[in-house]
Length: 140
Image: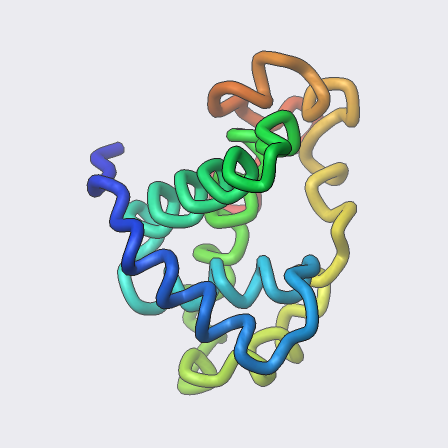
C-alpha cells in the first residue's frame, strides 16, 4: 500500500472541524475525524493522516504509550469500508446519517470482534500493523 506523506496542517484542520461542536475528543469524534479523512482523501491517505496525527498528538500530550498503530489503522479501514460501501449512498456527506447507518462504529470494543485483546495490547500491535487474529475484516 502506498501512503501519502503526513500533512500536519491538514490534520489540524480536520481536528478543528471535529472539535468545533465537541467538548472533548472522545470515540465519536475519533470516528468522525476518520470519516472526514476517508471521505475527503480516500482510505490509503486517511491511514497516514489519522495514524500519524494521532501518534503526534499523543506524543505532544506526553502520552506516547497511548498510541497503537494497529488500532489506528484498523479503525480507518473499518470506517473506510463502510463509507465507501454501495449502501452508503448519498449519506456520505452527512456524518450523523453515516453513523446512523453504521451504529456499530460507535462501539469502542468493535475491534474485539477481529482481534484478541492480548494481540491489541502487544508491543508488536502498538508499533506496527498487525492482521486480525480472531476473524477477518468484512472486505477480506
